Length: 640
Image (cartoon, rainbow, N blue to C red):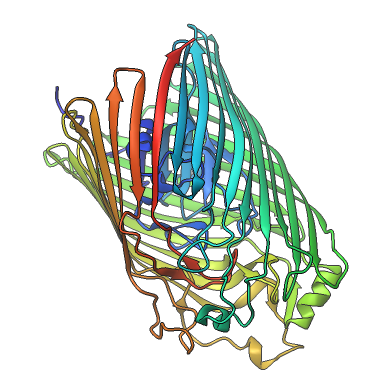
């Protein structure tokens, strides 16, 4: 059998990584319900810090299910991922340089094609696991298909005594649990019409980690003890998307997708918390429509479409000692795009498009922005060079401050201004080099942001409000390397990012500094300074191996040079501008027993090396890396 070669793509200017369900199953830790390892292990510049996924210097990221973008503006409150990795059939990760049809989340997009049932014939799979921290991640899935109809559904449950990144070296008050269900239905009415329905409902609970020692240096830096805190967060997320694909001709296709998304986060504190007991209940309802039509005329691939939704935000904020506030906000987004992909020859692709956005909420904004790209393949060598220039507009969160919460903000030197949308300018250059089935993809990019979206807590509370910073600048070199799928040996992968993520200027929207309270405190230093999630060097090296007698063995080694240090003065032991570098190794060994059974044993952070990742005050204070986790998993496949 020949190796499945990785090949260069001259039809697109978007750097992308395509992963599948085999990658999910064999990558250490990637198939756990709340894991994002399938992204962080393969995507350059992607990492978890303060319990949020960051990529390419930002944290506004889009999830698409079957190509339908699921809107969510509450970036500062959600912890859990959008989909259980075990429900993924393929995952395409796009890293900037988007065509006009792909929306506006500059820093990254995750397009999930879920399992449909066409890959099953009255088959089911039961996944059971058990490990330290009393953890388990379990799922039952069923699927079947006929010539015209396919369905897939799954139920899952998980729990562990380790959930969020711990506030000290070992997790304390850090349990998590959750359960959910997923379903996909595909109906091919005739060769010209296909209908798809994808839906999910999920709920999670996370204890907020705390520091049990009121006398350690972490407590001294925070300024208050957290050993008596007993906070937790409930999250509920549900979405449904119905897609109608209509084929007019072999080259003309239309798509219409109404969708609905419900998202709620409920942060609850013990009433006796010191110094502040916090309630933050944020509920977002999104209903919208996505549509497009595409055709080919001569050497031009033309497409046009729209994306629109209405958002109803119902939030409840409470802080001990003051009355609760319940701001209600309605907002809307209407977008339209048109683009042309011109291919005058097999070795040249030119892309040009425009996207228009109208946002209405506490403020009204309009944006019209171009996107241009070129890809050139060198004959014989088959190297592909690509270049891109484009602008993006990201609609803002609609969270507001009012009433007694605004009064509390004033007491802590803060005021409130409505958030504006983040505007980005990106240029990128890259090259793909295939060699004997291997594929090296290297790029360099710069993203200049105006009204950069971030988040900030109010005083000593756990109410986190999105903010916009005057500007940000992200510059990076990236590299990925993947081997072909060698059926006898497996597949190797490498991803590396050398990145600088900086901000400039004051906070311009959300919880802003109040000059009436402290005029001098609102002065920001001149020039750029590192963002709290700035890490200069990030490296992942791994191998998913296939050995004789049904044995599999995979590993991934992660290196991070250290995130920016927010506290350099004593009693902090870290005086430099960046926190310590860190390296972790993950391994998994598996064995197939016939076609029905697979048993795996995984060790994550096998050396159990603790390190302080970051000291930004999000979800429990400081954040250390994951402790060692060891667990076993059984997969049982059956017919019914």
